[in-house]
Length: 329
Image 1 (spheres, one colour):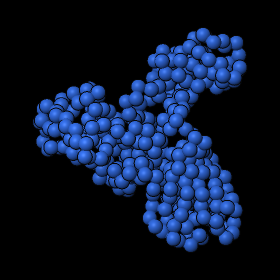
Image 2 (tube, one colour):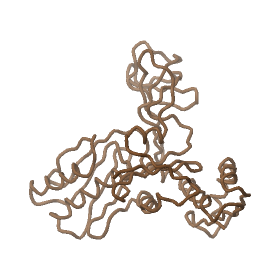
Image 3 (cartoon, one colour):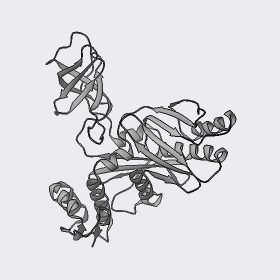
Image 4 (cartoon, one colour):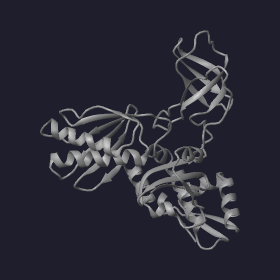
C-alpha cells in the first residue's frame, strides 16, 4: 500500500511517498515567496530578448519570468497575464528565472497549487504528520536521502552513483566493483530509483559502464522502464554506455534545493528537532553563528516555534560547531 506522509513544519513542508515501507519519493516546499508552477499571474513586459520569440515579464510581486514564445503585437510596457510553466531554479552563479507563456484568453489570475494540493491530486492517501509528534518521515530514511542529495553520492562499493548538477543537464556517473554486465543493470536500477526519490527532472544523462553487446545494453535500459514511472522519454543505451532521459521540469529538485542555501537547510532541520524536543516548554537552540544569525532574521520562525512549544526560545551561537551540528536543550 502506498501513502504520502505530509508534515507542515516551520519554514517548509515535507512529503514522503512510502510504498511497502520504503521511501520512494521525497518532496519539499519552502517559503520562498516565488511564484508556483501552474499559477496565472499579472505582470508587465519589461524587456524583449528576441523579437516575437522571447522576453522578460516582471510580475506585480516583482519576480521576473522568462516568456517564450512572445505573441505578436506585444510591446515593452504591455500588461500581460502569464501562465507559469516552471518555477525559478537556484543555480550557482546565475539562478534561472521562472519560465512561462502568455496565458490563454479568458484566463484569470490564480495561485499555483501548493505541495499539499499536488499530493491530493495524485489520488494516493495523504497522512498528516504533526510536527510535534514522532517523525514518521525520519523513520523511513529521510535524513539518509537528504545526505545523499547534498553529497551527490548514492549506493555501495559494488554499484555507486555520483551525481553532478550542470547548467545543461544533470549527469549520473555509475561505477562499482561488479562486472560490467552486472553493473549496467544494477546501476540503471539505482539511477532510476534515485531520479524518482530526489525529483530529478529536465535533461538527465546516465553514464553506465561499457557493456559487451546490445543485449546487455537493452537489459540495462529495461531497468529504467521498470523503476522510473512515466511520463518520461529516453534514448537507447549507446555503445559507450550512455543514455539520456527527459522528464518534465516544473521546479527545483532536492539537490538544487538543499545545496542552494546550506545555512537555511541546516536551520530548518534544527527547528524540526526543536519542535519535537522533550514535552514542550522553553528550549535553547545552540548552533553555528551563521545559523543563529539567520534565525534572528527569521523572527517569525522563532515566534512559531515558541507558540508550538508553549515556551520561550533562546538562541546561542557556538563558533566551534559545524552547520549540521546544532543541538537543542
